Length: 84
Image (cartoon, rainbow, N blue to C red; front, side, top):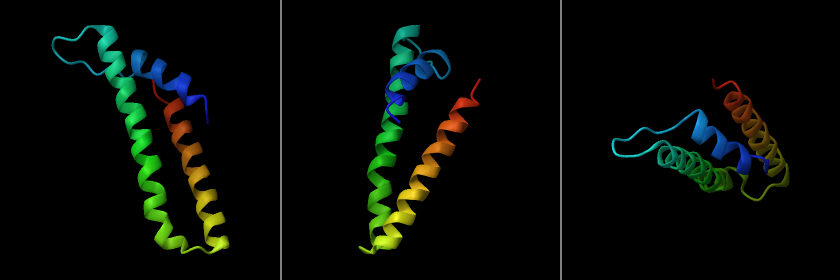
């Protein structure tokens, strides 16, 4: 999962540049990378906050939630790899 520190800057610059009037290509790439990292951060924050009431401290539910989170992350990276 640490590869996203390499993948997100490249994807932001080459695949998902956010074109805003007055910005050059490098700035739009940095903005896109920032948005990708921000979305990852929002997911890292809201996921545990949403799952903790459901898990309620039960080990079996925590393990199921962790498995679902890892599978969701894997599906997200698979979806990202299908980008042009």
